[in-house]
Length: 462
Image (tube, rainbow, N blue to C red; front, side):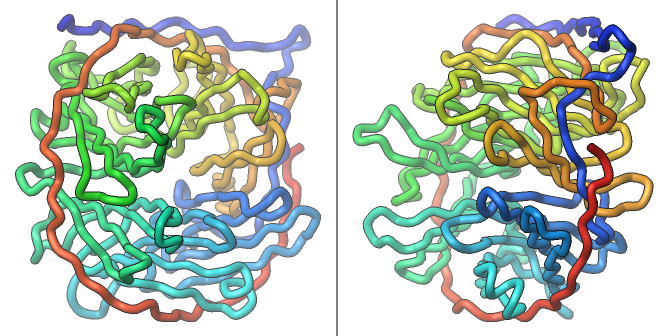
């Protein structure tokens, strides 16, 4: 296959006739609780209620915040200092989260946990289940089994060094109350993300679990996707793609994925060139057809020309203004250097259009936040989106609510129209061996207490 030479397009700053900055119409609120840069996550409970996870500014513990629209008081649940939280989801009527617990002796213990709003923010407690021998669970998904009607949980993370130091997929079977572990015993794989996606190729249609990751072979020159039957994980297939030989790039940093419309998923990462006098990094986004056998790269987009180590993708989300809208886009929340020297390195949202055939657009709308650093993105009501992060000047936790469809003069963010490179040739993944079930174990759900407090939330930009 041909090597791809990446050319970077010039970009134009979009301003109105009066010289004011254009941007996304938005409002920013601030919680009087200190957070750590790039260590927040936000999820929507319902139209009026938000849950924010944030690490304390001194790194001592993690907090959950309950934010109710129209209420100036925010409830705070402070977790124990031994608990590190990596991910959380809202499923049905509970908050589910995962991470690792530091023991006084021995390696950390991975865990799954859950709590209702009343349990966490009133009764100050949650339930947890160890995923030993994993030292932490980095990402998770939850679903209800179609036959048993029990809650099942899947997660990814590393084993303890004494066991094998592999990244594994763990599966909690709610009917058996047992944890099962899966990995490719013939290869060392780094598991970066996990999503649940409907597979339209199967009759009847069913949901599958997709695990996305990298292989350190050829200096992280391979990316891969594995598909698991969510009701029988021993039934699994996978494929890998050499970005080193096909694109002259490699993936030294974790990948991130999300479900797209129809039969596609999006995979994105900050990747590094392997040719030229000096290496640079760029954002690369793939649309992958997961109904094809083997998987195929349907399309890819590349942009950016970053110095080594300055860029990072914080979150990725499929965005549709409303359920009946034919317009879709992928939102990429990044910490990076803009493509123009007229702007300082900043946190930004890149909006890349998607058509119904899942072809990415040819330009980016980029919204830069010069005074705030955001880490997580979620869909709000109507056409609005939510971000969680901190204000750089005081480290207070911030909530950004904006409307990408409403462009106007603003002081909360700036807008740039940026160019990007398109690569539309279809490329095929090579097959991978199926993964093996390694072992299983069972524990019991236990209860842990949290400490409750209250904070104030104020509007600081509108």
